[in-house]
Length: 427
Figure 1 (cartoon, rainbow, N blue to C red):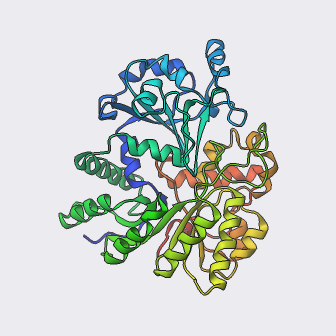
Figure 2 (figure 1 turned 30 degrees about the vertical axis):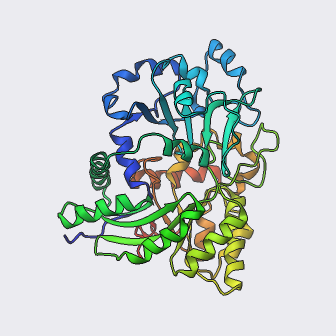
Figure 3 (figure 1 turned 45 degrees about the horizontal axis):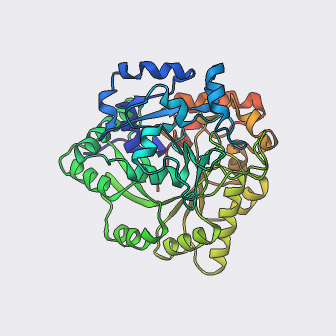
């Protein structure tokens, strides 16, 4: 199937895009009382994974708590995450079935008490997993909020998608990207089951997109097997082997991105990383040594700077490689300077500005000069491409263009070259 090139969405989550489209969406949620009507959602019955009800899209920055809800929240409020909800609040609306709601950035799970009990976390004093954060009350018990690798651990405990569900969600995602005018996508959270299913669809003539597949690694000990599997696969005209993706830090909206200045209103909270510097160095070394590109999730300025230092250290040790920096929502000038002349590509999502502008100045006021540095990258001659981060943002060329224009009112310089140059990623 020959597909003409129109536009490339350079950073998406393919399966998740279909899951959100056909699942329980919470982007509208501002008052918790709206949870009462979720059973009327058109995809409510389709949103169960086994007995667990799963939803996506809540954002605590948008919540307006009632006086009664605030009293409940006071009992479990964390000094570094004061606006986050709790299991006790979710219990008001879901007291009997297990519920897991994923935050809009995909980095946080919000569980009710039934879920905590079924998964063995209710009144548990088990420590946080390395690379994850669990909010706790004064007794040390989980309050229902799980970040990053703690969130991943919860995901692995909940019943997994069936092959039929996976195929259904992928086909839904195809339709979404086609409708938005994209013929090529760069998927950042692939796994081998998904890859095999995509190959089947390609063989059946049912793959309408060109997909560059990147495979995400959550557990360092699994990396050797992933590298072996990666090297054993071959690209085709429509399915292209990309690289291996590592989540280094979290997200700004959930205060998990690793930044150089503390989040406003916190007690010296700078975010967190999912892996230590030593673990990252080892994983990057193994992947580069196998001749595979490395894609690193780096939203915070400190995360991006640290990865560049590691990249240059590996290069000095004669372990070069192709590095993709994903998101780079905050970049300091000295980090951009380190990128010059290196085999480094950045991937940004301008449309995040449209969503995040309501809280960015309040949450990270000291880092505003480093926000969305697409013009600085352009001036420095560093290659970069635009994407949507779908389903975090809608796959939309107009939204990215709109964001570039609106960001100028914040002093963020627009690009000089034609916009579509940055929506046509090819390797």
